View 1 (tube, each protein chain N blue to C red):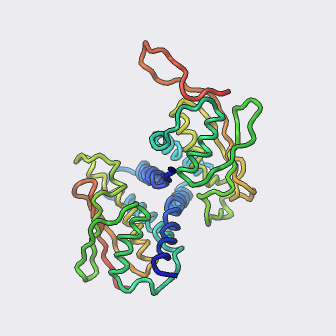
View 2: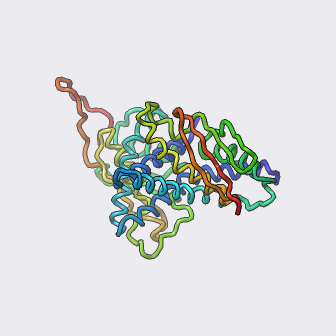
View 3: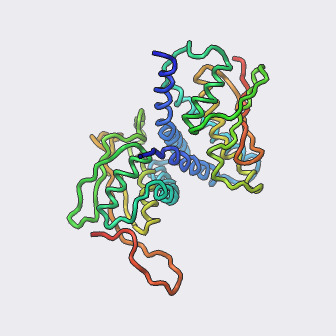
Length: 189
Length: 161
């Protein structure tokens, strides 16, 4: 192989791993700082939330996605646009509740966990919990209160990684007094 | 046309890591130094990891300067989507890498009052460079300084093993 093509392949590899490796270093640091997995999970969620409330602006600026009409559309945008854009994967959207207020994202592969193995004494660690916070924070900025959690995790022996998202309620915008409140953004079907 | 924004995601994560490392610390020289060290060490491990999956090809670099050029071009492009703007050396093991528009500083305001916070945003990258070099067989000390945002200089001092 020529030297040049070696470098191109390596370049691609390096790029994909920067976030993954940094995330791994963060989780390692948190496990050192906190006594138990629950605390680490909470911290990851909180940090994810902080990222999410900023990421949404970045996403809306890049994607030219308009207002979602309903939660189903939101789900599709999350899976097909947002995940693809930031993590390079497209989870599938399945397992809708009859009321249409809850669904699953199934990740065949989770880029965050390449080469990661949970050590024995961290069985309660939700390694990728940052993602839950990101989704929650981002959606809150578009007036949707949601609950997000991992219901399956390949790191804990499941076949796939599954994120369960539940719509809780639409949040009121903070508008100056005197303006009419028009319903905006996402309305559950 | 679909463009990946993984770089943006890394920047958000990097900022959040800095907030986390500093939020529980107290103010003061000692504490700031500890935080900088933590960030640098995290960067070091990531830098090692980035290089690790390369083909272990020892014939790849003909000398130290070749390694530094790799850091300035390939490595910097991968991590920051641009090359180092200027590389200088005294040919005695000291290299200065200048980035005129350092990606991780561009979100910080250019005002003088933010200059004191700039080192926080450089520490991880210093470690990244040190870690990358380490896995390329080069031991170093890496420091950084900002004069005018968002330009900064990384100084690499090669340590003889």
